[in-house]
Image 1 (tube, each protein chain N blue to C red):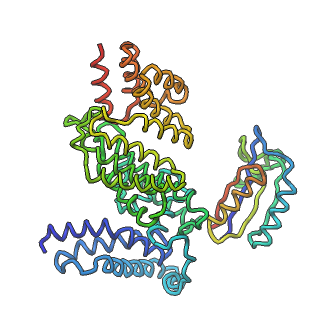
Image 2: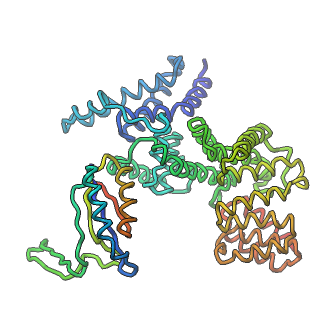
Image 3: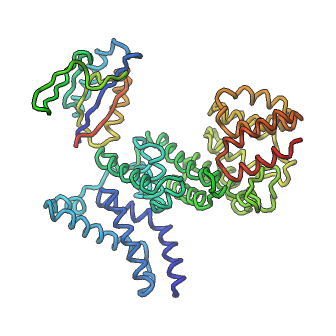
Length: 413
Length: 107
């Protein structure tokens, strides 16, 4: 095996085994810090040794064993001074097994710990990317445009809170599971959206490494909670969105709206997988299981991705799905998106009346002004349209979107 | 693991005043389930005196150390195995007291 193969193997093993190694160590040592640093040390040792010794037949087991030794060394080192050796040994020797939750998987426990409601949302995102995703602190800081030191502090404080406040390393009991899964999915969706519509000047319009990571983690949750409809829904939603990624940005970095996209460039494999998941959920809905918001959003995307040409889009089905979504989540942003479907069915004038009613709550939201601008343009009210584009451009944080909106504005007479 | 559970009231938008019977029943349950360590309601912040004897001579000043709309109205100390248990109880406590609750672990 040459060096390139070994490097690729290490990258793959890092992707596949990081969360498992950290999760196993957390259970054994009861400490996120110890687990994370020992896992990082074990991977560093692999990078040193594997090129010479070859990749071991069972890399996951090799890493777990190596990391376990590193963790014990570390605990011994730290405890020699204050003679807490015995206490440390208790942690990894005869620790009584924790009561098994609804699903017994170390990685799932790790995810629920990182996404605990007692942590701030941004902290949950950072901690999940670090502990479960194995991203480095600089990578996470870059993704969310924060200083590395601030991100490092955020993660350190979160780990300290988990320890001091005794946030349990546990999958919530069956009755608490749905509520807690919602929080986990919100974290993953946030990661995905930050990748999909990256904010900040000078940032690529799409951060593929983030959308890919969100999908990878959602697949993991899906494997661990195969019966959860919203998990399937979120995965389908991400896949159907990701499938359009390459068609969504033009060669010069401008966002391409859905109706202008080259549908031949969509990823057929991802679409097929997304559609399969949506069909699975439709079957469940037909059997009487009410779908949640991710499932409905996935279904809307399934309708879009089913149309070979934008003119074949089944807008009445999309509107029906939005009606269903509004009942579930009466947020103004959903109402705004619904209005876009209304425009296709009943014309821009009807849609504009709906959109204008959202002025008070959405005045600071770029998509509100972008939608208004488009409707006004279609109604031939160019001057007002231009003003709305101006406002949207001012508020948009995504470079590709700004470029798109600027072009649309400049096309107005 | 012990947690300090603070009951937070709001001067401009106070919680209801008829909570004592429900709180007593909740306390009975805390005792029965082994969570109870200590509890007590506090007199109004206007009754507080701040003492500062760091400068050689004790200075007594009238009123709480910080003036704010929200203030500490009472405390519990609970024994709970982990934060999830404490938070579950705190959610009930908030409803029963009709006030916000802060949960904070002892060192």
